[in-house]
Structures are given as C-alpha cells and as structure tokens.
Length: 214
Image (cartoon, rainbow, N blue to C red; front, top):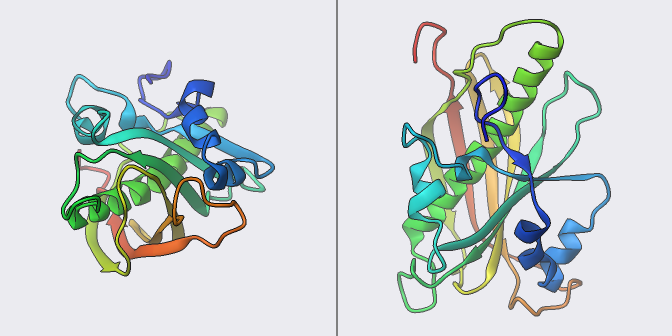
C-alpha cells in the first residue's frame, strides 16, 4: 500500500485475511493475545517495479501460500524496536517436495521472508517516527540477506497452517542479526493447549545499504 509519502507500507489486516486463522483452534489462540498488532506485510502488495513479486504474485495462489498475516506487540516507546514478529501462513500442496511435505527450499524462503517482515516492520516504524519529528527520511530503508543458516528438525506438512517466529537479536551499525523458528501443530484441529512442534530454525544476518547506495 502506498502512503502519501510514496513509501509502500504494510497495512492493517482485514477481517477476511484474519478469518482463516481464526477457524483453526491453535492459531486462533495465538491471535487472541492482548495488545496484538495484526498486519498484512508490504511484501504482499504488487508493485510496478516487480519488487516483492515472489510473495505478492508468484506464491499467492490457492496451491501455494493461501493466506498470510503477521503479528507483533507494540513496543513500549517510540524509540524501541519491534523485538519479534510472528508470521502466520496456510500452505497449499503446490510446494511439496515429498508427498504432503513442504519443500525444504520453501522452508528456507519462508524463514528469510519472516525475518524480512520483522526488518520491514522496524523500518516502517522508524520512517514514521522521523516523519513525526519533521524530518524527511529516505525511502530506501531496506536491507539484504547477508547469510541465512537453516536447521531442519521435523517435516512441515502442507495443507495446514504454520507460523514463523522471527526475533531480533542485535544490531551493529548497518547489520542486524535475527533468529527464527518454524512451528506447526500436529493438525489444524489440534487443541490450542497442545504444544507446537518446532520444525526448523534459522539464523541470519541482514545488512543495510550504505547511504550512497540504492
């Protein structure tokens, strides 16, 4: 969604975009947490430049990523960063590797995207903060994946929901370190009280461009 400044930003999730996850007991419980901000990431918005086209168009089909929203809790102050973002997805069977199991490369892609959603949420927050102070912040506030290490622990099943929890670890200059966990229930009808299975973990480092770049 383009803001008045021309920056494409995430937007509040609609009732229709949240509804698929509210019909699944365990994801509904996660969404019922107090003070939760639920967003449609800006990477789901098609752009004339084809930026984000992988998630905005290619993977947005009934056979691939049927539904996707992200959530976080509002930081305690304007200067504080968003420490973690949970991305909810429902998976079609058009991304199978083995029958009924999500291709490992797609798992890595989802981890990278979830980390990027966390990064973008903080960039948008910082952009809005600077505007409120009367500054004219750069619209080129993105970052690039420098490395991503993925550990596969359990299969991720398709035709079901999955969540990816991305957490900010530290920042040094233009570098941000982020971890992530991919979690899934035994079934979409599992009791909300059942423990989720951690299917994969990721550790990545993102680097922002130098001011003269982009």
